[in-house]
Length: 167
Image 1 (spheres, rainbow, N blue to C red):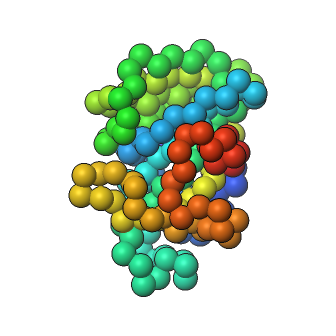
Image 2: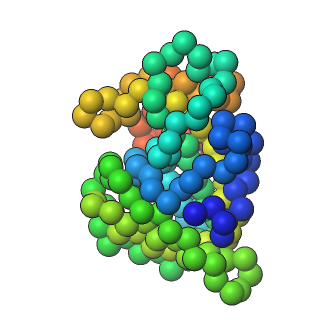
């Protein structure tokens, strides 16, 4: 589902997967809205784990890749249902005719989210972890970026504005 979006700062994902990973199905962990921009940032688990992992991840028990997807210039925001985490969400993007805009729909048991945004989507805070038996992501995360690795070993609480608001 990345045909209609331009992934910005996607080098980490491209290095892991060789191409943009499929986003059609994902696990939605959190949603952050910021009036500046305005932006919507989704923290998601990707549906597949890369075959070849970076050196930082070698020798670790990891099975899930997580990242933030940040949408810019958000309008027409609608959140009809929100009961996180959403174990399996359908992520659909439809191109709009005007000014490189897209309509984003994220639906599943526990979420009904829809908005329009610019087609350029920021990617950040890429990490790997071993998912808990109960499906949570409270285990230790190993981030790809050195600054993230220095600052975070576990996913911080939602009060950590620099983690959720900045990519």
